[in-house]
Each structure stands twice: as structure tokens, then as C-alpha cells.
Amino acid sequence: MLIDSFKPSALAEGAVAGLAGQYVANTLDRAVGRLPGELGHLQDSAVSFGAAGAFIGGLEGGGIGFAAGLVSEGTRYGTDELLKKLGASDEVRLNLDAITSGAAAGAILGSAAGPLGAAVGAAVGGVVSETAHVVDEYGSRIAHFFENIF
Image 1 (cartoon, rainbow, N blue to C red):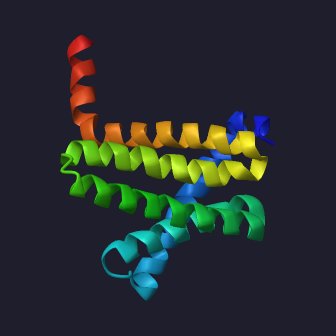
Image 2 (cartoon, one colour; image 1 turned 180 degrees about the horizontal axis):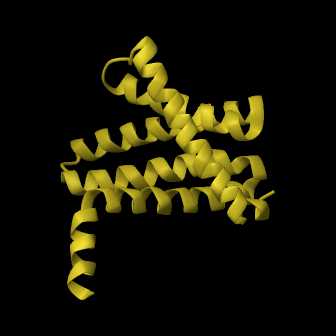
């Protein structure tokens, strides 16, 4: 199962399921409403991960995805609050939030493939989440850099 997750078809399936999960979460937000503050982030994360998991793995996948969403957002919030108390800058907080939430979600999702899957999932989740944060935060600077080169 772990090796199967590295196949391009599995990666594409995961990407499509992730988009579908976010669509479901956004639709629910518009139809029912979003909880206030951090609870709204928790709701969005749990629903989007749960829906994505259900698209891929049915009821069991939905349950694992829901748990991953809760843990991911809970980890992000806890990390952010701790770093605020320690006086960390916004840049440091955002980077560590991305790494820890991605690693937490990856570990939960990877646990379906056993202990090795959880370890690989945590590593991959942390890297992918941090990469997404860096691209989001510095995308225009990165694009400008490559425009100057070419």
C-alpha cells in the first residue's frame, strides 16, 4: 500500500480528491455557515480532509481524513499559540505552523499503511505543506527571480 502511494495515478487521485474535499468544505460553509474564529478553521480542515478521504477510501477513508483534519488544524493552532507566547516572529510562526500541520496530517493519513507509512507521511506532509507555504508567501519573488534569469 505504501509503495502504491508513490505512483503518479495515486498522486493525481489524491490531488483531485483534495480539490473535491475543499469544494465540499466551501459549499458547506456557504450553505450552513462557518463557526467563528479558530473553530471555523477546525471545521474547514476536518470537513475538507474528511471529504477527500471519503472520495478515495469510502467511509473508512473519510474517518481517517476527518481525524487528519482535526489533528492537523489542532497542531497548527497549538504551535501558533506557543510560538506567540515565546515571542516568535510572524515569519517563523507561519513556517513552523505549515511544517507541523502538514506533518501531523501526513502521519495520520500515512498510518493506514502502518508505522512506516506514518513516518513517511509525516515527512512528506511536512515538506509539501512547507513548500506550499513558501510558494504562497514568496511566489511573486520566485517568479521574478526566474524572469530575471531567463
